Image (tube, rainbow, N blue to C red; front, top):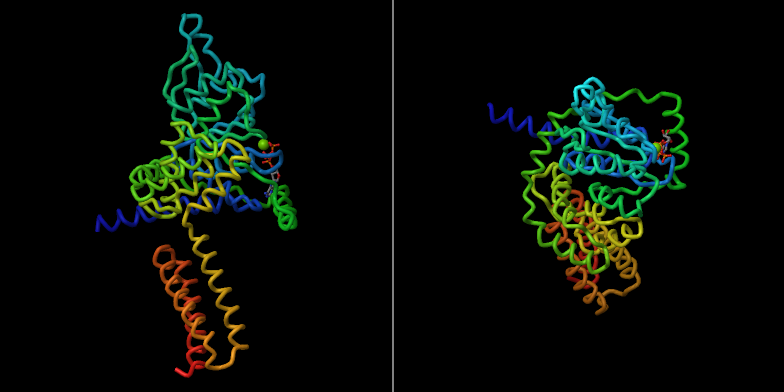
Length: 386
Ligand SMILES: Nc1ncnc2c1ncn2[C@@H]1O[C@H](COP(=O)(O)OP(=O)(O)OP(=O)(O)O)[C@@H](O)[C@H]1O
Ligand SMILES: [Mg+2]
């Protein structure tokens, strides 16, 4: 009985991240991937930055993520002139008089569990150093204060990838990076409707889906994920990235595992499979040029359900083409024997794809293709007089 309750609880928990992704993306057009990346960061207890041109809903997504979480939230828009006190709280004047340097951190970044810094790469040097230790060690140390902070995930947004060397360390700490693109032309109609709904206040304020307690439990699951199955493939991908001039710092190489594991948990698994390595496209690239390369490498190297489905679609198209050709071939023609043989080979391949993928939709598609092949095999047999 107790065991069943535990199982149910685990199952219930595992359903939360998907629900969160759906709820986060819901008011927007084409922002499902952004919602996924933010959720991965939350599960992995890592930081994420959305980089993209103005008006692509970066801020709106971060705000909504906070509304969907029952957590202490801090948000701020950084300019070059932002003072440390604006983020970390003012120095306590009373304390100062007694010679104690202390910040009043109430309601500021040092007390936040989730934080959103808009235009994060505007951080000036006074803020940058404190930010670096907050992000990495979760300690605020700015010469006045040294305190542990509860920050779980920082969401950053910016219009650009930083090219200043002094911002490199900050960018490196944003483990997940996503480049938001404007909505594609075929969805502009939807964009107008969605925008109208948002602007006219027709999107009800969301009810939180989870709080820190759930996040911590989910994160614990993430840390229990078994990654042995994908380790060698991951190493191979790192080697290819390096060869193609895409360099991951050692920090990112190691931490990527947490995001891979988070992707497994997001898909209800406690075991990482090859498909989970797709998250490398949020970790390996430093800019969009890298992203194109990484996406191509991943598409080439990973056996994803999409890849299996593509091969099945090819086999299906070929089979249908053969079916047309056969119509024009007279009975007992020796070419039919050849086609029959090739179809048997294709059939074997389809079965193999279904087995290998371990994915329901691939298996369903494979069944369909097998049916088409079998029907055709039967027709050929008849034409051959078997
Ligand atoms: N994909 C979208 N779907 C629906 N509405 C959108 C979408 N993109 C933008 N909008 C609308 O545009 C508004 C502005 O977006 P937001 O301020 O979040 O952009 P931003 O990327 O943060 O821009 P900036 O870089 O200038 O800060 C949103 O509140 C929303 O109403
Ligand atoms: Mg913004």
